[in-house]
Amino acid sequence: MKCFKARNLPDDVDHTLGGSLQAWFMNYLRGLSRVQRRLGQRLIESIADDGKQYLAIQVKGCRGTLYFPRNVPVGALLITLPEQLYSWHWHYYQIPQTRVHPDDTVFDCGSAEGAFAFVNQHLGCRIHAFEPLPAFVDGLKRTFAENPKVEVVSAALAEKPGLAYLHEEGMSSFLTAEKTGKQVAVESIDHYCFERHIPLSYLKADLEGFEMSMLRGAAESIRTYKPRIAITTYHKPEDPVEISRWLKKIHPGYRMLLKGVNRTHGNPVMLHAW
Image (cartoon, rainbow, N blue to C red):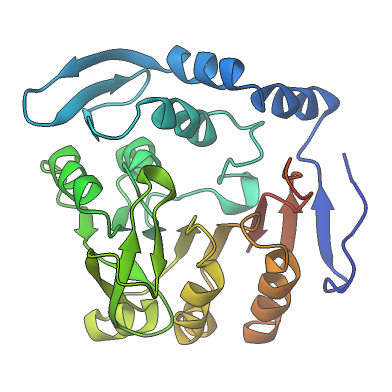
């Protein structure tokens, strides 16, 4: 189902509501908190308290245990899981053009509790999970302790390496210039890739409005490797146009699709590039 194209987008960027009328209706229902929680609850096999400040969660159809911080409302996870596992979801990263492949080197930018990496680790791909929030970092290390192909990177992502402050709001934590008391390391994708000789092939990102800053710090990697990209575009009004035009400038060979409609201001929810 196609919808109107935002002004100033590159001519060959499509904008779709994300499939059938049924998919649109399901996304509409998803906006109701009760429906959101019910969808997430269907995906959870069991939840147990591990006695070490984490909930040990078994997800239907997924091997292993996902460790989720007890001090973060579990309702946030009930919203996140459908984003990873229901293909009709506007926040779903893996449309046919941007699926994760077994031989991929994946950068999970803004990994949070690690649901994206968790549901894809079975493919055997190598995953670098970037996350600055200490509670999530510790949980990620426990979740992927037995998988040497998942590397947890305790850092935020921006244009340049350095230090920044973190405004903590659980799933919605973000970087800030204000001295909040929680200083975190900042990495850039270019610095990380070229220092370690990593050929990036897949880039997933949800960075609470810092998507463009991360991309600027990934310009050479994107130009060199042309990774498949699935990135959120609903946090800032200018992001759909700015991100799509910037990617086209960095690598003119990209094909792109904008998907979904944010309920708050009408922005597309996700940009896919391949």
